[in-house]
Image 1: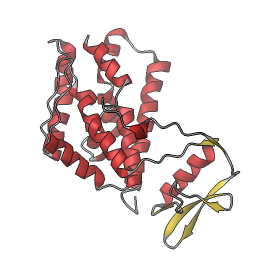
Image 2: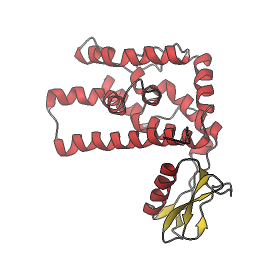
Image 3: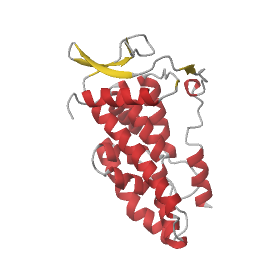
Image 4: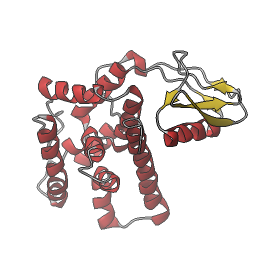
Length: 247
C-alpha cells in the first residue's frame, strides 16, 4: 500500500494549490539559427546564435561570469531543434520548491514494521535530521497517507535560502528537485552533505530494495539509474556555475 501511495505521489509531485504559471502552454518556435558560439565582452561571456547575441525572455543580452557555463549553454542551444521560452521568476521558482516540501520522497516511509521500513529509517532519517539542523526546521516523516506538516518557520527559512541564489541557479535547483523528487536530497547534494551518486541512490531507495529481492535488468534498471545520475549531476554543476565566477 505504501509503495502505491509513494508511486502516485511521485507521478504527481506538485502541491494541491494550483499555480497558474505552471499551466501555461507556450507555442514552440522553429529554430532560426544555424550555429552557436560564445564571445567575451566587458568581462562577461555571451552566447552567439549565428551573428546575433542570445537574449533573455525579457529582451536583455544573456551574460554569465563563467566560461564553462557559457559553453554549456551554447551546446544546449546547438542541440535544440526548437525553443520553448521559460518565463518563471525567482518568486515562482522559490514558491514551487517550498511547496514541494510536503511531498518530499524521504518524508514518506513504509508504515509496516518490515525490512523496508528499517532501511528507510537507517538511510533517510539522518538526512532529515541534517536538513532540520541546517535549515532550522522541524520536519517529521509520515508513515501513513497523511501529508507531513511543514511549519511556516521552516518554509520561511527555506525560502530565504532559495532567494539568496541567482535566478539562473534556481532553475538548476528546480531541475534537481524534480529529478530526485526531493528537496531534502537536493539541498544535501548542493551542500555536499551527500555526493550526487549517494543522493540518487537514496532517491531510488525503495526501487533498489525491491531489486535486491527480485533482481535487476541491467539494460533497463542500470540505464535508468545512470540517466538520473547524469541529470542530477548536470543540475548541481549548473547551480555551482551560477553561484561563482570561477569553478
